[in-house]
Length: 221
Image (cartoon, rainbow, N blue to C red; front, top):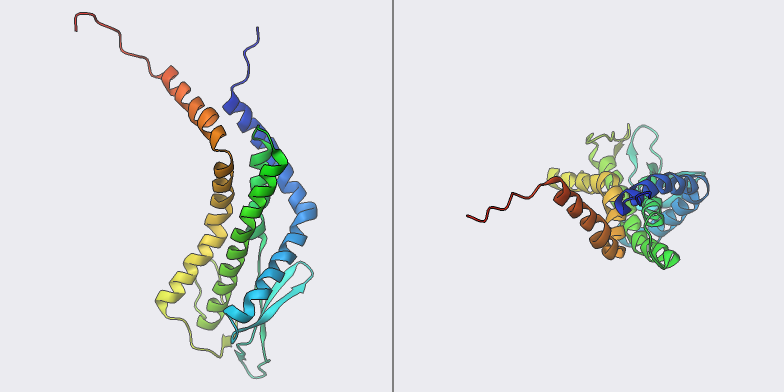
């Protein structure tokens, strides 16, 4: 009689198959509308967050441009400058969650997908704000940091202090490196706690008990 496949191994194989499919669907048809929707959402709050610094968000094909009111210091200074933004990392958290959820057995698949998507949309919005704020700080402070280089022109503005500039750099790292992986994983764990306890934790416990032999029983002790 064939031994049934271990539930934990079955989930890992399902995740290996589901994640590339979800990412492919996201890249082909969903990525661009999500980026444009995120850009429009960020554009709605620019008058309250950066009223004296940002005119708004502009869409140029797949490129997102932050229109800054801080004029550059050059011979023929324009009234504003366009700073490029990348929202790919902000919206990729959705297909990562979709792939994990598709591989997880249980009832109400559509409900879990919808609820997780609704929980991740505000996270993507915050990631977009953090990256936009970092681009503004990079432009007006004009000091290279992390892997980002400031524009060639200097901004006609007072630069941020070193501490504030460092904090905006941490925000950029959160938006680019930490949240794209941590956010979908945490939402997936939140919506699949029973699966986590029964299959993942239980399966690992069974494997450990099989690998660690019990000491022999000695009745004289």
